Amino acid sequence: MPKIPDEVVKRVIDLARIEDVVGDFVTLRKAGVNLTGLCPFHDDKHDGNFIVRPSTVSEKRGGNTYRCFVCDAKGGPVQFLMEHERLSFPDAIRWLGKKYNEPVDDVPVNYTPPPPRPAPPPLPDLAIPKSWVKRTMEIGGDQTLFIYWLKHLPWDDEQRARLQQTLWMYCVGGWKDGRVVFWQIDHNGIPRAAKLMRYLPDGHRDKTQHPGWIYNQDGCRQALDPDNHEIIKPLFGSHLLSSYPKAVVNIVESEKTAIIMANYYGDPDTQLWLACGGLKHLQLDSLQPLIDQGRTIWLWPDKDGREAWQKVCDKLGYDKCRVYTHFFDTCWTVADGMKADVADIAIRMMTTGEGPRKEQRLKDSKDFPAQAQSSKSIELDTDEPFLDEEELRDPRVREWRMKMSYVHSSGWGKCPTSNVPDVKSVGEILNEHPLLSKLIDYGDTTE
Ligand SMILES: [Zn+2]
Picture 1 (cartoon, protein in one colour):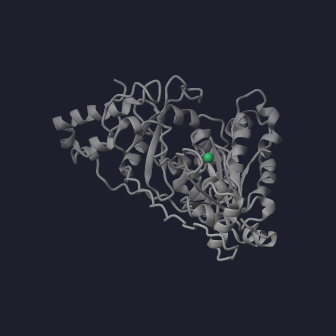
Picture 2 (tube, helix red, strand yellow; picture 1 turned 30 degrees about the vertical axis):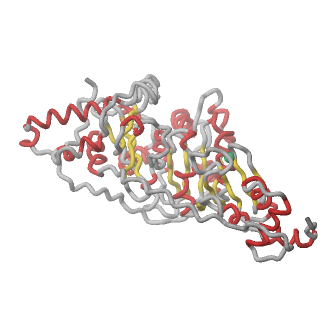
């Protein structure tokens, strides 16, 4: 077999674009400057591990390469063909020559780019009625321990005055058994899930209880499994994005932290606070809407999560996403010894006056582009009427109520994969009777 001249090899390699070559075999979608898809070298279930850094990115910055963070497959267009199509080096060059109409030699090559893969079927509509959100917000109040605790933090006058507004912005609701309801409403304003958590009077989460979840999806077992990524779980606070299009987006781990920081700074036009609900939920999918909007993203890990979040940030390969550590660095002694996050530091500062106060905050904010933008109110579509007196006397209502309670109180038991009662999903039960769709009474969940 004739040797391919070096200059021909070079010419072909210069023409080869990794996004085209991988794109012939893998369905890719944009993720910031990068592309991502399912890794073809291992049994990949989730987008986001396999990253293609396109040829438009300079070589110095890793352009024209692919990499899998799970199986560590990596390389350029030639390596991809050698690995994926099991071609020899000369045959990979011939394949590329054929693809880019660059004559290589007379050795025949089977260039057959496979047909594009069919797009995955769209997810079923799992939207939750907005009236549910409203109803829980009506329950929210001092009987919700989290809200009670929040109201008794040592806010300054300004902060205290806007606390109710902050809770309202985030659609924070309550359950009659004292749990707080954190709705996860997506960037289009569609409620997708709710997380129910019990807090103790000292503001810490009751770790003896797993959070409960509400999804509008069949099959409670899957629906209640937090690791089932088929469920759309937007970042907590995503619904605020459209109202504050210019704001820098700060992402923290817990919903509690997002609310505290939002109220602490009180400036959603320039800074929004979103929560991912835990490190492992900081996923490409939930960050994608932010990347699509070209947002500047700051990640605020908990004290023990800095390294892990940096990894996520690196993996994202999105130029406008950074881990924000300045705050920690300037007041680390305040948080020393605590399993602290940024809200712990803020509370500590409110309590003791330690740490950077307003002047320091202003200095910090030079890192944030201050772009004023008029705030708009959050419109919830809440015209749906609730039960009137007569409907409440309907004997069927009690029965439905009990069913609802069963779903609500079931949680997922001690472990996400065991002890899950085989109950219908909330959505399924709601569909049983039109009246029931109005019965969004979350009481009686503790029996
Ligand atoms: Zn892989």
